[in-house]
Length: 144
Image 1 (tube, rainbow, N blue to C red):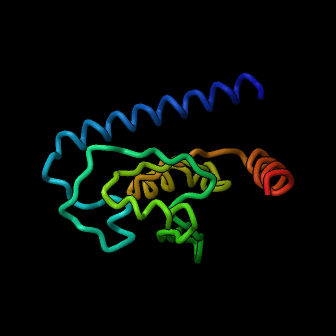
Image 2: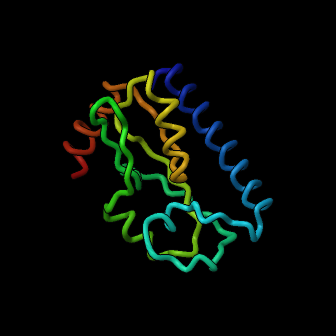
């Protein structure tokens, strides 16, 4: 990996760490005033009275939100993938997701980041060539 790419990834990790710390502080301040915007509560019938002081950070290839670009507009909906479905069973655990949403044009990244953050998802953006090599090359060619 070249030095500039390593630095970019390192900067993204530091930014995500700051975002996580900010979310944890915000959660502490909310206390009993939780507004129920957690991803798990959006995706299933969950007992809203259960609260968790634990946060599970999930770093995965697939995100818990599917995105489609239709008619010049992004559409977002909760995914029904295997990992998402399995982790829903941990209903009283707060989750923050980190992963790559696929290749996203640089001009769309700020908007995508804002929308995914609404679902407690923190995207890691990569360049098209890197994503193709990673997913189509390494993952599909070697892992599965």
